Length: 264
Ligand code: PEP
Ligand code: MN
Image 1 (cartoon, rainbow, N blue to C red):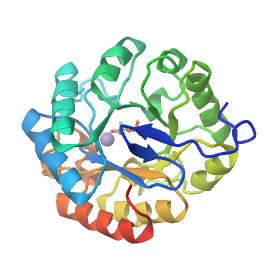
Image 2: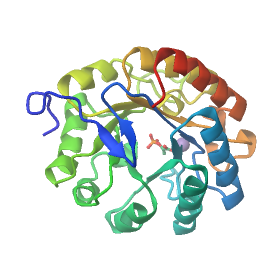
Image 3: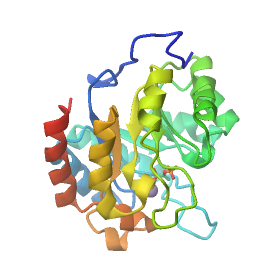
Image 4: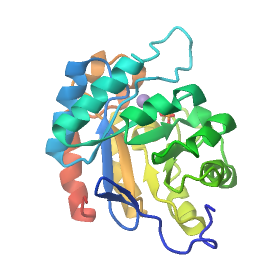
């Protein structure tokens, strides 16, 4: 079902009038984690003012260590839905377990599957019937074939609205957090009709690389970007402040991107 042989035309996902795929450029921006109602409200306002269409933010955080901040949970879903509604933005948030799919689908417009869960097949099956579009992140060691097979689980369950997200893979390089595989963008678009989104924040782990790799992703044909932005990155509650843009950097980047592709 994910293959272009089966479905030659690009899939365009229409979420409340915002069209993702088929040559439109969508920008999703926001913090790694929802921290408070005030934080997500402030950031939502900045994302909207810069021209972004989707507010990102994790209420449930998949942390490498069990003692790290795990997210504010259901309260965060509510804070984010309110901020999105108030500022006229769609919302995307990560869901980590099948039990939380229904509540996340109730509050968010797009459900995100994190890199660590790309092959959580019970979660993927449940997302097949959730009724909301899904952004599936590539596992950090997954081949294209494994990635597309993971998408296939969601599609086979009856949900046609899947976006593929390249967020960097693990290589021998340690300077960057991951190696953003730009090649994945045209390869996946050739093999599949699904929209391809790039995540230069997790793909590099370094703020100064987000701008050039965002532009490179768009040049390579990405249908959208998901970018971390924070009003106070040095004091963010996850370690992802180092890769988060400051609001003025985010706004300047979107201005530049508009020269490359219209933000629809
Ligand atoms: C995130 O988007 O904050 C995140 C945890 O992403 P990934 O699953 O790509 O690490
Ligand atoms: Mn993050």
